[in-house]
Amino acid sequence: MDTISTQTWLILGGVAILALIALTVWFIHIKKQSHRLKERFGPEYGRSVADLGSRTKAESELKAREKRVNNLTIMPLTPSEAARFSQTWTDLQGRFVDNPKGTVVQADELVRELMLKRGYPMGDFERRAADISVDHPAVVANYRAAQAIAVRDERGEANTEELRKAVVYYRALFDEMLEVKKAA
Image (cartoon, rainbow, N blue to C red; front, top):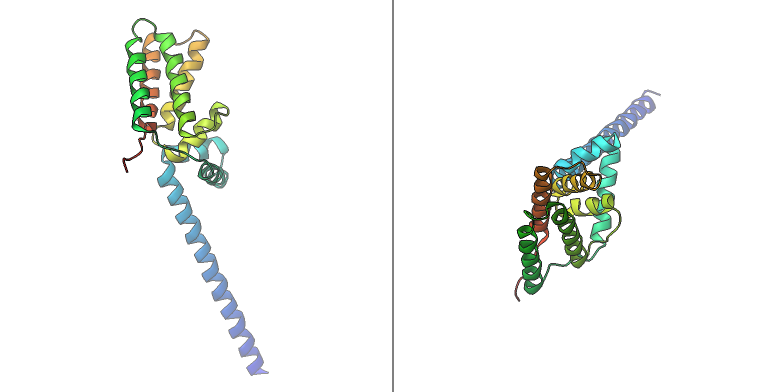
């Protein structure tokens, strides 16, 4: 009977050790995944946690974004397309002094056109921002800030300095997204 009892204790101890090892491996995996998402999304990670109320929900959302964007065909621009977009932006900035409100609208339209040309879907704003956050997490906050100012401007609540900031924010996203195909 002592042999069976000792053998049972050894088996139970072995199962407990295996369970502890499995739990440790799982915990390390979760920590690595969280770290990877924090590194990839930067401030967008914290924003998602705050918006969704939990780390688990935010990480699930961020992984869903990655999966969705990985299924898109995001293409760099040809040099001629990039030159055309750059020239259009330069012209747009030149009109700011005479028409700040119109320039913000045009900046938003140009950024949307650039996104569409690159292959991003043109859903609602939050979906566009979420998609952009996967490949351009450093500037998605600028896009959100520019959009917020544009919305306030539509209500007549934005002053010229805020409109200037909106154009600067749009420009940061524009510059980041203006990727060009490398010559073969």
